[in-house]
Image 1: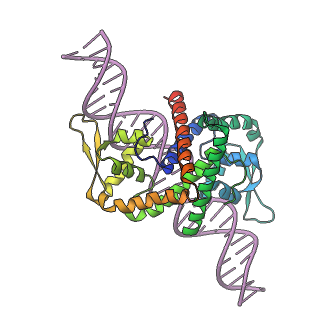
Image 2: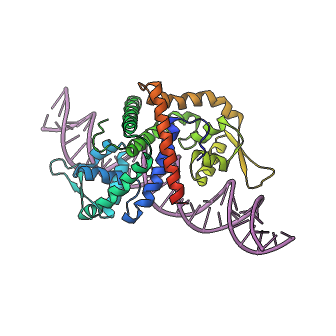
Image 3: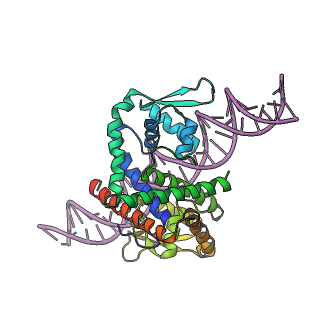
Length: 149
Length: 149
DNA sequence: TCATTTTAGTTGACTTCGCAACTTATTCGG
DNA sequence: CCGAATAAGTTGCGAAGTCAACTAAAATGA
């Protein structure tokens, strides 16, 4: 880990993102969950029955990505997609029993990464960090929604 | 930008990374530079003549990625790869005049993203943020090199 | 009411990325 | 000095992700 040269926020974020993907794809492999799907599953553990569009907006991905990620989770037996009765355009995602069975393992692995990352960073600074990241995310979101509708 | 639910560092980083890619791929399109290549060009503006392996380690990507990204930059006319005289395994990347011609535009776009992100975040907190991100990166790097050699 | 617009989801084409297998060149131990 | 190990780069493959074009359903408004 030499890391000299022009260190910017953007570059640190890119590297951290790649590292997280490596960790998650390796650790979640036994559960047949890919690094691209874990966030959807996490969101559904938080709240079942969300529509693809709701998930798309929360996770901030393209809707095509949501469709494919949920398709994979469905193939893996963790998720079931059900058409909404009132609005037939909407598909809601529910958890299958298989998902509940791996929930504990899942969270152990996922929160494990945060633990690794924040080792040696005091709680108060962690909170400030999250705060600042959220500010940046708000800024970016505002810019993007203004400049590429 | 609703962003409720379980907000973790990992998730914020993932979203910010996707946003940066959207911004960069759109803004750098006129220069025929992809979001995956910009970091290599930035590194070369910093220091020309680095080998693919040096770039790979600094940028923390797979060497396959470096080979392909530099190949695209070469196709676009920004980079020339030259075999090292002493060690014939090594290829060094140098900038073509075309790169110098777009350098100003390039940096305006790239630093523009940081400006957007850090809007409203005091300088001192920006520095602390970078500091903490670096700590996390060190932690992650240490973990990954120990657990997947 | 009914034509137009908007919304949710799907699919195809493309980029970015990592892993594994391979080639070629260098280094190292005996 | 030579065979084995290591190192740099390339390529095939598959996962993750975006964009654009499409379908079908719902909302809007004249």
